[in-house]
Amino acid sequence: MDLISIDTLTDEQIETILDRAAHWFGENRAHRPSEQLRGKLVFNLFYENSTRTAMSFATATHRLGAAAISLSVEHSSVKKGETLEDTARTLNAMRPDALVIRHRDNGAPAMVAGIVEAPVINAGDGTNEHPTQALLDAATIQQSLGRIEGLKVAICGDIRHSRVARSNAKLLPRLGADVRLAGPPELLPDHAAAMTIDEAITGADVVMMLRVQRERLETDLGDAPGEYLTRYGLTQERLASAAPDSVVMHPGPMNRGVEIDGTIADDPKRSLIALQVEIGVAVRMACLEMLVESVPA
Ligand code: NCD
Image (tube, rainbow, N blue to C red; front, side, top):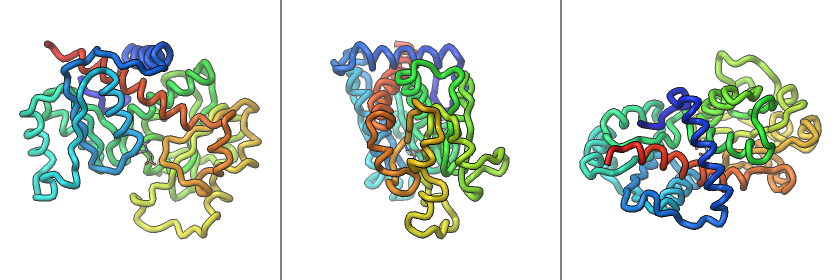
């Protein structure tokens, strides 16, 4: 089994991942290392920049007693013209127990999964999907608000380029949430139902802000410093219209003063940003144990 998209996860598998993540986060909050995957080998291939996701998978791997090996893409044979297919064949011949990949091309993890025999986990492909981020977002909401069913979740910002938004827009409604997507008109997908940021945030239980993916923009937004925050960002004024006990999330990396006011990001009562990172390790442990154990011995 591979973990490429939210679409291919069954409801039972989603439930198992969230339950096991709660186990790893709860009982083992002190992060006692487990030996569950001792002797196993997890390859990490990050063809795009990453701080959280790369470190989170490596940490989860170590906490399960397995070894994580990261390919340093900058120094790899990609620079000598090797294709991703040939890289996948090469790595497959080393018999890893799982392979985690992030790539700028939509569909690259699915292609690699067709070559590599071990389970492949999508750690973000282009503008397509980032399934483990959506799973950790769901686990964080569940942990802090006690439920997902019936909650209003506003996902705001650069929806067009966000694999986080795409995976969450698939996962959270399956768990009973009412998801509202909103952003600047030029950063919304063509088919998106039009909603302003203010409409989406009003009455929301969860406000999830997204970075503008300037590296994926064909033309610059041309916004002056501070302009984006005033027009589309999460300001104290906008947040005041959300539900009284609402929480704020962000997958990171954050651009303070652009999509989010820094004082909101740092507010210990409302901001779940650090909790998302902490629960992210538990969710990746849950994903690894589900996938790697399914490999016949
Ligand atoms: C996101 C990503 O890479 O898709 N970050 C993450 O994995 N937590 C979001 C982003 O880059 O803005």
